[in-house]
Amino acid sequence: MIGYMTGLALVMIAGQLGKITGAPVSGEGFVEQVRTFTASANHARWSTVAVAASVLVLLLILTRIAPRVPGPLIAVLAATAVVAAFSLHTSGIGVVGQIPAGMPKPGLPAVSRAHARTLGRAPASWGESAAADGRL
Image (cartoon, rainbow, N blue to C red):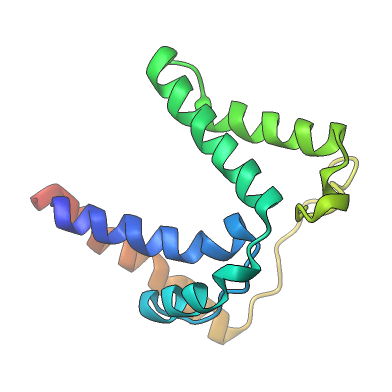
């Protein structure tokens, strides 16, 4: 069980390396992502790394001193406020963009057959993971 969870954590970390460092990372698999990250690590944006590290430290502190507080929500809101207040997007911090105002219009998205098959596989995969997690 520990190896399974550690493997999942490593895959998730590898998938986020480019986002938390600003370095270009490509590849579909774990090995490719880590290899391209190590090759381009000298392109990391230190301002992005500082914000990511600050969010991680805040999460760890909140988990330790106030475990009942929604730490991830507070960390994201704090990072958003700091980036907006100090205009850090001009310093190389990537932002998602504008948040649309108002309520979205209700409706169903258009989904092709190929996407429907892909979407159908995800719950099956989640079910297998949950079953394996419950057995271990």
